[in-house]
Length: 419
Image 1 (cartoon, rainbow, N blue to C red):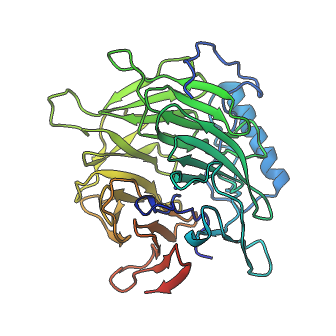
Image 2 (cartoon, rainbow, N blue to C red):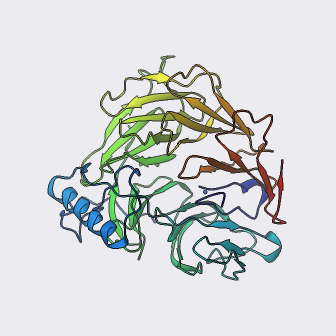
């Protein structure tokens, strides 16, 4: 078993990548914080404990939800382990759009089963998945399509894929993110945020598409701004949204309240700070409040929740535009970064960030389309795809990629090779 959350690959070569890939008016109504009305009511502690039973996990979720309802903050006292079940997804383009094989470690016999379920509600040749994200428990997929539709696909215990929600949007979708504890078994937390161009950020119920809350980012001309990246902090009580030269921070539980804006450059003419569209951000999983922020214009800066706009350091050595940032789940001092129009995925040790400590070559990547990667929850394996349909899986613990180039899989043929 190589990956815990392998992801689907787009049918069009320029969108091939391992994805780890309605315009409602803003509401002024304040949401009450009872369990049914709260935008979200669940929190998650670090994944450091042994696996819990389903009943114990649900009890902990309820305890965390109640803590949020009581004071709107996360409770660190109760730890919840990551309940995801690992399985592998491979795509065979010759069989048309859809998932064709899933390997499930839950099965005693390592059998690969074929599925005829169409991936998208509109499976025309002009529509394809641009980005796919797993829910934390592996029971749902959040899909952003080329036609600006956001779909939710349910993953049954027997690995069948069932479309459960399709929401058409009036403009391109710039970014999406699951609520970190989203699960079909927990209706309170089963939701995601979406950013549609020229619209407020929307918190959407993943079961029926209902709008739970909206968060407005407004520029000096009173126009809505949609962020290019979004992420929740570790306590899941704040939503961070990146756009040009700024980060907007919202209190998740108070959607009617204006966000706090952090300007990543002191002034428009200043050469200091992090300039350009904020394209990626990620929080380190050690609960320190440290997070990394990258820009399409180049540069990766480190911030903390407590120090606000003050930059704590830089990841140096590469100045290319940043497309994705992800911290290693089990080694929080390691951060992996992908770049625009680059085959390189670089790894930094934030304890000494003067230069990258490792590189992974994903293959051909000359497109402006974001090509995603993901890291398995045990921190060992990194998977990435290129625009030619080739998927590569790397062992992060290997000291030299010159000696080990990873496992290569042609997504359109399904034949792995080991190099």
